[in-house]
Length: 458
Image (cartoon, rainbow, N blue to C red; front, top):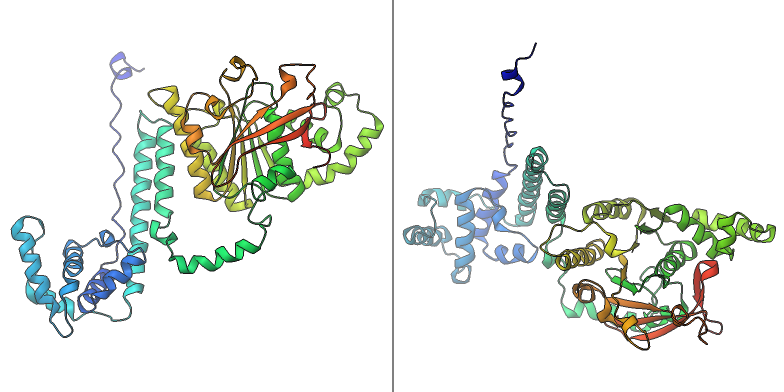
């Protein structure tokens, strides 16, 4: 029988797992540094290709590389570079800049003779590969420590681990750098070649496509703002239908407000022109059912995924997107809506919303996809006489407006005035369009069919 003393005895301390040896390639480091001593120009050549000398794990070799980097402008053909390197290392050591012991001059001479001219890039790749492996090992160890800690927090810790993992595999910033001469031909070709569905995602509305130069672009964060009951979810479903059903573009719809069954009902009604209230009552006519049967195969074959989980955090969204981009070629994500997302910990609600907004933009950019996020507006429109929303009405954070590439505000006059002469119309007010014009696009609001469509005569 367990005694009271044994029952309340403290648990044994769980020792942290031992960190494995860091992956490294000392031979590659030695040969690469020797080659740099003989051919100092490889320092600049490899640097332009993204090589980081901090990936050299042996202190003596790393400091030797930095010495060559410092002296390369003074080197002349035929000069014994190991002597100059030795003198500079001694100077750095005397100044306290370098704590590592200076290698004897004989060792530098021996190193100098181990160069492999012409193979520097190959050895640099070996070192970089080991450095990436070392970061992965360290990240795995950090993940074990976080997961084993009693203070583990699924939001902050998982987000930090995923961000670190993305940093491990992300290409260097210089990898996207190019001289203007290499880019000019592509610019000239784009000037005479209309964009295709490979470069743009059709919105489903002709006038909006024309304004946006063919549709949504990769890397864009699009914000759809409106007051409640204006039809945000309806127009979001229209964007999803335009991409996935009409153009077979892989699309993810994250519905935090509406269940996936209800969203499926709305998409069927919109495609087959079935009154939504008839479907809800189960009294759809035979004629409408026949039309639904004709549209069902196209809807079923559409690359559209719907998730209606009540909780959606940034780490969950990034992980889901990463998987669909890799396995399905995902190009469009719609989030309905921003204020219902699980906010990261922050000092204020405004800072939390700003964090969500910024990360949605980074997701769009990192994965090369379009992210459309719905957003509630504050009560500003209702306090104005004409009720039209403005970009400044975006609720809770000015960062949403700042991060967005496109801001579209949805407005219906008949939502405020039932007898309005514009009943059945909706305005898509493009209030911000980074790099393009702004305008108001008028569409027909067929809310009984759970859809909005182009106006007749467009």
